[in-house]
Structures are given as C-alpha cells and as structure tokens.
Image 1 (cartoon, helix red, strand yellow):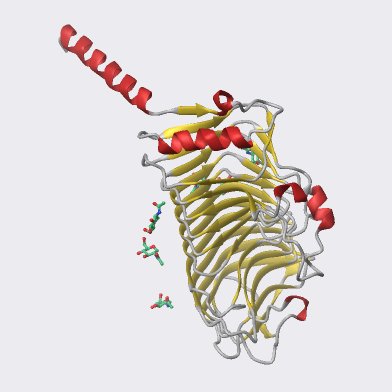
Image 2 (cartoon, helix red, strand yellow):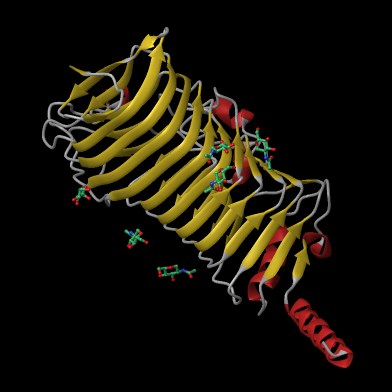
Length: 393
Ligand SMILES: *[C@@H]1O[C@H](CO)[C@@H](O)[C@H](O)[C@H]1NC(C)=O
Ligand SMILES: *[C@@H]1O[C@H](CO)[C@@H](O)[C@H](O)[C@H]1NC(C)=O
Ligand SMILES: *[C@@H]1O[C@H](CO)[C@@H](O)[C@H](O)[C@H]1NC(C)=O
Ligand SMILES: *[C@@H]1O[C@H](CO)[C@@H](O)[C@H](O)[C@H]1NC(C)=O
Ligand SMILES: *[C@@H]1O[C@H](CO)[C@@H](O)[C@H](O)[C@H]1NC(C)=O
Ligand SMILES: *[C@@H]1O[C@H](CO)[C@@H](O)[C@H](O)[C@H]1NC(C)=O
C-alpha cells in the first residue's frame, strides 16, 4: 500500500472513531453525585435519563465500590437503538422491607429495545429481614415482599455477568419480553429463604437463560403462561426447587406455552428436577406443547422427573374435576444421576385430556443404588433405550 494513502486512511479512521466517541455517552454515576458508601438512587435515575435521551448508544456506569439504592423504576423507550447499564460495584437494597414502600420490584426496567445489563457487580436484596417476616405460606393476604428485578416489555436485550443475591422475594420477574438473553447471570440465596425463585418468565417469546448458577429457596427457573421459544442451557440449579413449567391453569385467561428446551443442566439437592405442573378443578384450558428436557444430571433430587396435573398446594383446589390443560410432545432425554425417592419418574396426566406423545429416552436414575420406578397415569410414554417401566399411579 502507498504510504500517503495508508496515513490518510488512518487519519480518517481516527476521525470516524472520535466522532462516534463524542456522540456515545458514558454516563458514570460519579458525575451525577453517586459515590461509594452513599445512596445512588437519584444519581442513577439522572444518568439513565441522559443516556436514554442520547442520540447514540450510551452507557450508564456504576463503578467499583459499595452503594445503597432504594426502589428504581427506569423506563424507555430510549432515543438510540441500544443502551447499557454496567455495574461493577455492589448495590444494596434497604434491609427493612418497609423502606421500599410496597414496590413490586427493587430494580425495574421496562419498555426498552436493545437494553444490556452488564458488569461484574452484585445486586444485594438484603433479604433476611423480609424472609423472617414472610408468612405467605400460611397467610393468603400477606404482604408480598419486593423482588430484586423486574424486566418488563424489553426487546432484544442482554443480562450478563452480574449477580443477584438474597432477594426478598423472586430474584427476577420477566414479563412480556421478546428476545432476552441471560448469560452468566448468577443468582444466590440460601436454600431455606422463602419464595426466592431465581428467574420467573411470563408472557415472553425468545428467552435464553445460559451459563448460569442458580442457588435459591424456590424454583431456579419457572415458566408461567404465554411463553414460547424458551431455552435453558448450561445451568446449574441447587439448592432450590428445580426447573418448572407452571403452575398453569389456575386462572381462565392464560395463554398457551410452547417450545421449551432445557439442555445440559445440573440439578443438585433440590425438591424437584424438571417439572410441569397444572391445577385440577379450574377453568384454565390452554395447550402446553413441545417441552424438551435433554442431558440433565440429577444429584440427590427428590422428584427428578415429574408431570403433575393434580397440583394442588395446601388443598386450595377442587380435585373432583380434572385439569383441562392439554400437554403434548414432551421428551425427557439422557437424564441421569440420583433420586432421593423411589418414584424417580412421575407422570400424572389429566383424565380429561390425557398427555400425548411423551417420550422417555435413556433415563438412568438411581435410588439407593437401584433403578428408580415410574408412576404413570393417563399417559403411555414411548421409551427409547433405558427407562423405568410405568406402573399405575
Ligand atoms: C417490542 O416489540 C413489540 C412487538 O414487536 C412492540 O410492540 C414494542 O413496541 C417493542 N417495544 C420496544 C420498547 O421497542
Ligand atoms: C458464578 O458462579 C460460579 C460458581 O459459583 C462462579 O465460579 C462464577 O465466578 C460466578 N460468576 C460471577 C460473575 O460471579
Ligand atoms: C417461536 O419462534 C419461531 C421461530 O423463530 C417463530 O416462527 C414463532 O413465531 C415463535 N413463536 C411465537 C409464539 O412467537
Ligand atoms: C454443560 O454445562 C456446563 C456448565 O454448567 C459446562 O461446563 C459444560 O461444558 C457444558 N457442556 C456442553 C456439552 O455444553
Ligand atoms: C454451553 O457451554 C459450552 C461449553 O462451555 C459452550 O461451548 C456453549 O456455547 C454453551 N452454550 C450456550 C448457549 O452458551
Ligand atoms: C407434536 O409433534 C407431532 C410430530 O412431531 C406434530 O405433528 C404435532 O403437530 C405436534 N403437536 C403440537 C400440538 O405441536
């Protein structure tokens, strides 16, 4: 290449990259009065407003350090096609549940296209006081504590790297999102913390949860109604209650669930492994189809493989009429490890709408060193390779 030409090109490149840099904004909360060991609620809100109204993709930065923050409700739509929130510090919620003034979620982010949450930071919900006060298992009118995160109406978004710790309630609620990807987003809370579900997903299409460690006191990942195209891959779960589709059918305005793929997960010391649960005696009559569970290792799990269409916690339902939810095209493939109970495979389907096309492919689960048994009701699974033989439930 001619020397003058290459120098000209380099100058042009510098010019262009400088141009982009001056348009894109780094909005560090330190420039908005947010400092370590202080409260950053206002600083973060102001930095978000600046980044969200910038004409080029911009970034809100929370640097290393420990901060406190009250409930934060940040919203789009933003002007640029994307926006990032990078957190490298530790942000603590108020420990006293009342300080959050009844907010459903501590960090709520909504109505953004191209949102990224990144960094190596931790969102600490400071749950212990709320867990102690939680009487929701006994009291249907309990004060539902504040969740760590609400991701609502987001499109084409990434949540990666950061950790959600000790939420007062669910760690993450995903509602009405399209194409949202959780990657390397760890979640941790003690096994005995009540209702601290990891990621609950509802009414969303195209959600991936990948490369993530989830330790909680409730479901690691749970899928409500209206979900499609959901992938859970390379996830370790435990302690907790496992990976669950449902519960479904409790209400009559629910939307169908389709195409759920759970692959290469390790589930340890949990109540359930992989589960689909629906309520009997209720009006809900959606379809649940294309549920595939593959390459799952179970370590000491109470109910490793379970379809339960008679799900009825604390007898809050009428079991005299069957679930109206039609479950079809379900496969359990290469499921191995250990069960805490003899009935390692339980498939209890509805007598009104029996399950169709349920496959058991290479199920190798041991209870006390022997193969587990399978209990089946209103379902005739097809078997490939090894799998326990169905006995009537
Ligand atoms: C997200 O996508 C939905 C469906 O395409 C659209 O209606 C909505 O406006 C989008 N939201 C944003 C914030 O871009
Ligand atoms: C996520 O958890 C795993 C195992 O506990 C750990 O090795 C990894 O470093 C964690 N990642 C982050 C970003 O904290
Ligand atoms: C699921 O993904 C497929 C393939 O991308 C798409 O055609 C389908 O519309 C999606 N399902 C829903 C309910 O959006
Ligand atoms: C399965 O996931 C684990 C992490 O949980 C990862 O180390 C391993 O490489 C993955 N295996 C495959 C085949 O993707
Ligand atoms: C699962 O883990 C394997 C091995 O680390 C990696 O190659 C693969 O990309 C991961 N899958 C996803 C969807 O991240
Ligand atoms: C179930 O799978 C079969 C064969 O793969 C397919 O023909 C059928 O449409 C699927 N059922 C549903 C409800 O998706």
